[in-house]
Length: 133
Image 1 (cartoon, rainbow, N blue to C red):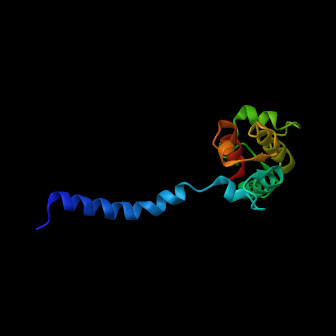
Image 2: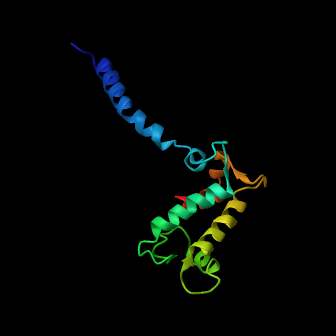
């Protein structure tokens, strides 16, 4: 006969075995996802490359611009308006990448031209991430 204590341990062991892989995936490194040159950081070119791919994915009507609706909450209306200098109520890829560049600079407080994993965890880093993925 199995004791309650052993049954509990067995249940916890089975549960943790099933959960461990999903927890490992939850800790995916943002740097690793965007760091194409594998130097351990994300530079502006890598960030713009990721943002360009995101722009293309979000441009569901394939007209070369993004509306506030297509952005799916990645920018507030105020940020959208500030990033739309021609006031046509859309962002071209160049306008989108200009916003990415501003967010990149805000997320790089040491001004070394790269974003580290620690910098991605700051509010400015998280704001940048919303435009990269």
